[in-house]
Length: 617
Image (cartoon, rainbow, N blue to C red; front, side, top):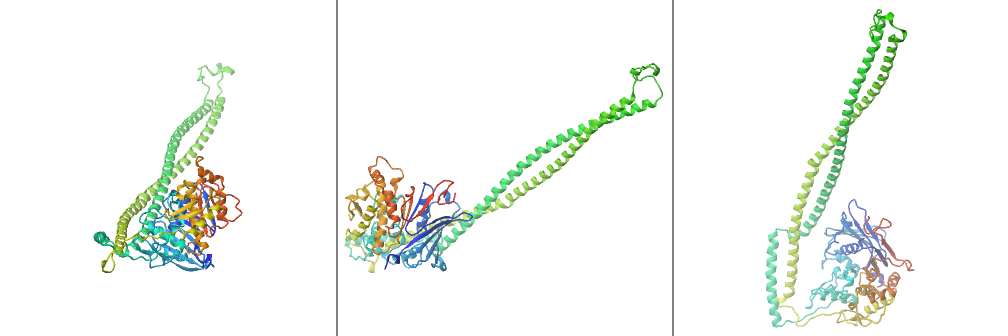
């Protein structure tokens, strides 16, 4: 067996949604660094990878993820070089798995369960365990020696470390759960030693047997009550998961229909407001045009009256010339008594009246042209008014008659689906609780219903000798990372954690704890790969260089990390391949520019230049 015979590495992470640009990260085997400011999606990316690998809870919703509904992770098998894509809906449900040959041809495609099954390798847990050579391994779960098959969720805890965990004051292989402490210690021991947990048999004392009998009676009472509760819910237990998946898909469709109708209503309402504003503008202009038209027509009548009066004056002059000589109509003097200067000349009057009439006629013609333009504008305004009113009525009619009923129908359907989903989830929770109590019942019941409990605690934590090789691997990494004041690194059975230069790992500040937790997780990978022990061969770390974010100048430990060049040495070591597998690091600070070793660098700018973040801006 060689290092390449088992495990896998992550090739890509993609988050997709209808009508949305893909949010995608591409990785290579070896070191990958995703760096950038806070709130750009780094921690969300880690959650998506964990979710694709079988985590029960989807990544928490963030504003940038609105509209995205599917996460897809592609991995490459180190043994066969096949590419495996894991596709899972962010609302939950099972997993679509596709396997492609190195040539790109499709080898296998289908839907598998996201939940681990100890008897079925055709689950996401089973597939990843088989790739890691860990399928079928048994691990002890309690002090009484009960064993169960290993789940990939047990292993993922030692491969994917999120930001909150990396600084905690406890051993990196422990979650802090008292009930899971035995299991977590056994999983760590199994990876370090390559040996699965053995069976433990012991006979009970009388006191223990009486205690177990009482516990068994209580458990059976609870089981009966749980069965009655599930029966009262009226849910088909065998079809629960299928119905829940179908219901989630139906809810997604209903939500899409609801959002589509709301968006369409919003668009029509915007059009309605625009047309209403246009109608008011048209009607306001119509009033102006009507007022101007009435005034211009009055002026036209005045012009016409003036022209007719001047025409009458002109004709009166002609009539005066044609009449016999009579006394002057102006002064009453006889014609022969008028001097040339006092003579009344009708021709001059005619010429003046005609000239004034021509001038007024031109003004009247100009006015008529303006009136014609006003008439044309009034016609156009009337057409625009009618069109705007028609569009207003159509928009309102479509909103009231089609879209609002659709929105109401979708809302009612969604409400009914939510009620049904709540009932199904309540039933699912009750069933899971029932199964847990049945497992507890099985722990106490054996042949003849004798309690199988031990009179002594049966715990087999990894010993110092077993983990010496692991501690050596961690020490080699810390040396390469220029960890200040580094001494011998050993594993303490009492602390169940590393002791570095005589000091417990957890006794340091959070900056040192983050770095040494990273060394713990990467060191486990290095140890397993170098000794050919089963391991997924991939590690994902969030914020291992915490000390480089906002260093406290009063923190002596932090200052030693900064001054010793740990950051540069950390990246140089991993880029050179010291981990012996794939390492993906999510950090705020960028790695050094020149490391003299190739690695994948992804930078989130949180600005308009470059890549904004995990999701397109």
